[in-house]
Image (cartoon, rainbow, N blue to C red):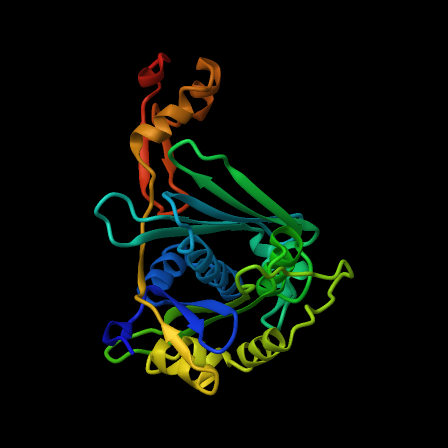
Amino acid sequence: MLASLRGDDFVVPFQVESMPVRGRLARLGAVAEHVLSRHAYPPVVSRVLGEALALTSMLGSALKFEGVFTLQAQGDGPISLLVVDYETPQGEAESGRVRGYASFDARAIGALGEGMLTIEELFGKGALALTVDPRLGRDRYQGIVPLEGEDLATCARHYFAQSEQIPTHVELAVAQHFTRGAAAPVWRASGLMVQYVPREGGAVDLSSEPGADFDNDDWRRAALLADTVGTDELVDPNLSPDRLLFRLFHEEGVRVFAPQPVMFGCRCSREKLAGVLRAYSPEEIAELAQDGVIEARCEFCSTPYAFTPSEFGGDA
């Protein structure tokens, strides 16, 4: 096993040796804490956003080309919008960059309580959109599925079954842990994904029946083993990913590949925000100004920006 698997903030690709099954395991420590603590979200919002961070990191790090992978969940419920995106490593950069935020009705969230909540209770009626935005002239791709089921992992499984026709099992976990010397618990997020990959020349025949299982002995066993993983195991900082994967698949054999580092990274800038404001009319610019200043804040990283109307041809 790889000594570099100690620590956090990376995605580990792996292959189950005796089966046509591959997977990815995400471990986010400082990244999850940075995103979730920066906005002081209610715990229930932090948990679903943390799950989205882990899921997006797993899916985005699987891209074989430069680009951005975006997960967006939108509905008419207490959480109206959740967005997470992953930017593949650029140039000599070795880490993928992930960021995320959520918009919600604080009063409606407070009325939900702290029990186990389904994705429909959190988002109401809505949809999950997964978007691949490649660079270098490739076509943009987007898949959309309804926000239905118990949790975000269930929605992801439905997406792969319907849009990608790939048998996929996903487990997501988010929790707070106390670390040595810390005055308060810190957030951790993790995810496990396994997929059936037909051997050369093979094909996947998914049933058209909603919720039907793919009928393959290897796949059923792999999915059952993945389903045994506990939330505590996924987020345990003392249980390294290689040990966790060995614990799950030791009888079948598991090959662990080099980890793919993940870091927090926001692409906001004063220039980009100014470009957005230039689309407004002088009258709209004047309405946005308070005491001669237009103030804006990045939803992802909370960085504040200030402009004057004169920068856009308006009155100072």
